[in-house]
Image (cartoon, rainbow, N blue to C red; front, side, top):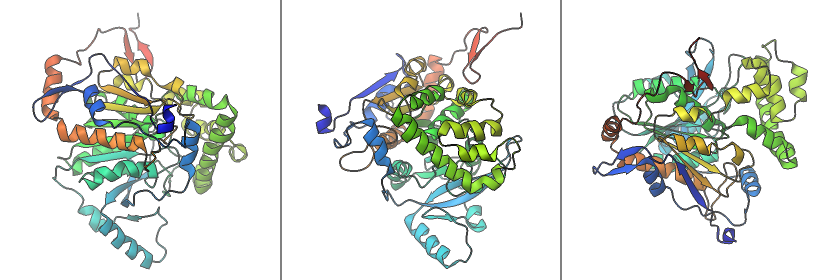
Length: 435
């Protein structure tokens, strides 16, 4: 009956020898200790007393924090996946309101999300800086964008305290245009990689951090795994990651609510995205227009659009290839995962508890209540957004990054293992010699 008071149970899962860290006061600590010290108790709205109510409440109208953005369109540098994508940079309220007033006077200006305007060439030329402000890169959930309330609730306390921030929008999301017949997918790490590389070039002294939500959390985890020890981020947070997409797909189709509410809603959101970009998408001869337009559920859209787009034979093959559960094993920066065990979309059965126990760089925080991107508190706001922001702030404010790197080198936490057999988390197969 603890839900009557809004008390949710919080649990932590991590390696028995969690990553050693050194604070700026030269005190030793660990990643798990720092995470538990930074994350506030989970106190939720008792009127939303289960994961379904918490998840469905996300559909209500909510203005959220009034964050303003300037948008920059990037041309993809990927040799296989050309095209373009939009990155929205947080700007001050004063600059944003001035830009919005100017936008209203323009005729025929591009349609953009609320409180978002485009950089002028002069403004973009002035972007490079040698300042040392911490900077957060955010990735939104399925069909979302920088306008999402859950994302803005995470950015708001950090940017208010002086952080810089930007949001990498999935291709075709947040009213951005596509120039090739490809939307984002769950393994689409190339745009965030290009963004982070570019940010390091124009902001050489800024400590970089990242946060991902739902599908964006899956993409971010895959990116971290692919980068491994070469990753230049200081720390990262994953919120409501579906982790094992195949398990989540099966779980969603096994109940009426899962199929007819969640699968159908997500499928409808993707269909609306398709309608915005179908002229470009249908340039792919492998996509059957009638099959796409008769799709009702998420897995049907993936079958008829994502599979022929990316070359997967079935949606199951797509889910197995794109899921981030194994990539977690290759993460080599301080990493926090936040999941609710009653999440009806990111199923508890898909959460990689054992993998978190095997990686000293990772800590998992789970609550027994909160739904998918919900965790609504009685006084307003979402608990997971506060938890993510608090963890990142503590990592930046208290951890001596160079000293912690030296401590990891001294304790040799990354000692190479035997030559064979090797499990490569990013290919999910054992690598063996030919004979």
